[in-house]
Length: 68
Image (tube, rainbow, N blue to C red; front, side, top):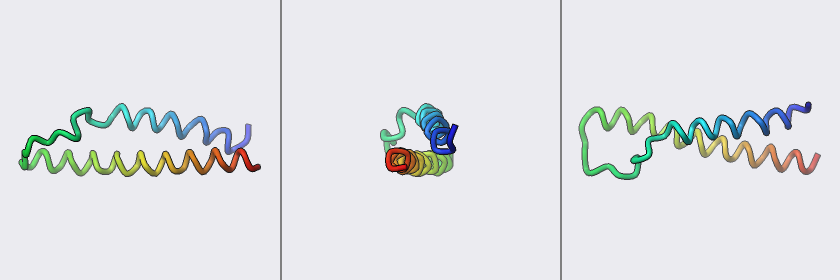
């Protein structure tokens, strides 16, 4: 198994886990601005950014695998 194949297996599994971890109601804030919401929002933001990075990594690995 090549490293690209292994990456194509690991990255989607991590993406699925990240998407399932994210809060389903993350877009519905309700105007709340308490301390708990801010802490949770920071973690949600980190998950969101990591999800985008993993999607980009998956696209790059897939294109590389096609080319090579």
